[in-house]
Amino acid sequence: MNKILDRRTLKEVLSGLRAQGKRIAFTNGCFDILHVGHVRYLREAKKTADVLVLGLNSDRSVRSIKGERRPIVPEGERADVMAALEMVDYVTLFDEDTPGELIALLEPDILIKGGDWSAETVVGRDVVEARGGNVVIVPLTEGASTTNVIGKILDVYGSEKK
Image (cartoon, rainbow, N blue to C red; front, side, top):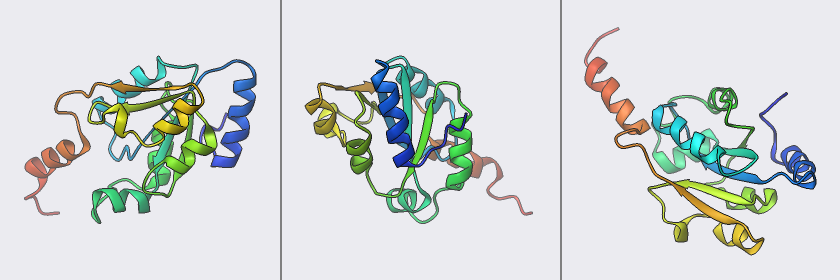
C-alpha cells in the first residue's frame, strides 16, 4: 500500500474510511531529522484515532518557517521515512506555510499538535471543532528537537575537515 498520497487522492481515501466509521486524526510538521521526540509524539497521536494522517511541510514551506539552511533532508526522503513508521497511515505534502487549507479539505475528526502549542492557537481548530471534532495537545519530549540534534552534530563534528 502506498502511504504517500497527493491531497485529492487522500481526500477520496479518507471519505471511504470515514464511511466505514473510522475516526481520522491529522498532524503536521517538518520532521526534518527523525528523533525520539517525533516517534513518541506520533505514537501518542495514533492512539487518538483509527487513522493517522501526517501533513508534511514541503521544502519550500520548511525554508519559509525554519530559514534558508533547512530542511536538511529533502521532502521526498522525509516523506519516505515518515511513511515507513507503523503509526503513520498516510503522508501528504503541503507547500503552504500552514496546513489550514489541507485541514479544511481533509476534514479530520481530531487535530494533533505538540505541547509547544496551545489548543487556541492550533491552525485548523475552527474547522475541526465546527464538525464536532477536537484538538489534542501531546506533551513534548524534553530536549528532543531537530535543532538540538543539529547542534549536537555541529558540536561533535563541526570543526572536522573532509
